[in-house]
Length: 160
Image (cartoon, rainbow, N blue to C red; front, side, top):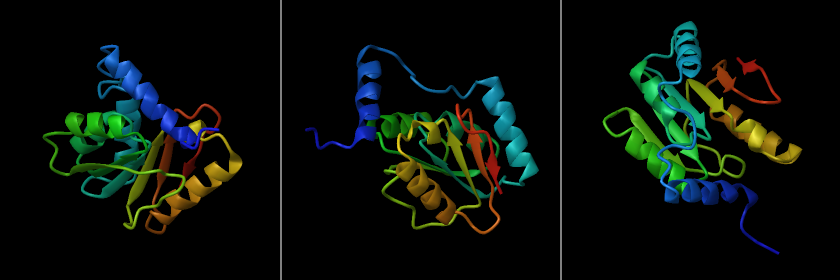
């Protein structure tokens, strides 16, 4: 039996994609639907100048958009390769940081003004993992802070 956590399979996928010469596996900062959605969300919730955390940040596309929109961005992902790509993508954005974090088993010690999940929640395979993740995300937010779930294949809601 393999003792490596299931979700680290994404690390293997990122490495395979990059070793094949692919520049980006996930979203792109120039995705119009993503940009328009995040712009509207930032404006409706007055998030410019505020701290926003993104769970399962992948390669940093949302971080670029949120940083361009004036947010203080913090991305987390379980994949070290994705986090490294995200750091490279966000180089030049002084208010953007990225860290490796298992969003199911760990929670941030900080409180944020908003949170984003762009195709992360549906990748969690058990109810208990989803429950722990949602609790960790909720606990990372100031009271009344919004959380946007974007492009979730089986969930469509915004916590506020």
